[in-house]
Image (tube, rainbow, N blue to C red; front, side):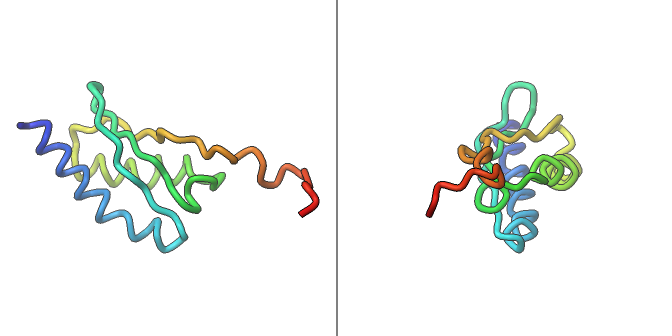
Length: 95
């Protein structure tokens, strides 16, 4: 039951932080909390491929969630943008 309470509090913190990401065209999705009390998120939209996503995750989202739910030890990104290496690579496919 205590774990559900923590999950609910984390989800509430995510909802409170979400508008800041959405203002820049991004979003995040809760995945899970592991046995080491790490929150796993998927960054979406502009956040999924942004080179500053790690800093946003650590300095913004993680700090906010850890303040709201002190039991949390870390926030980690579960997804790497599948096409992150292709933008800005100088490759021109001709379209």
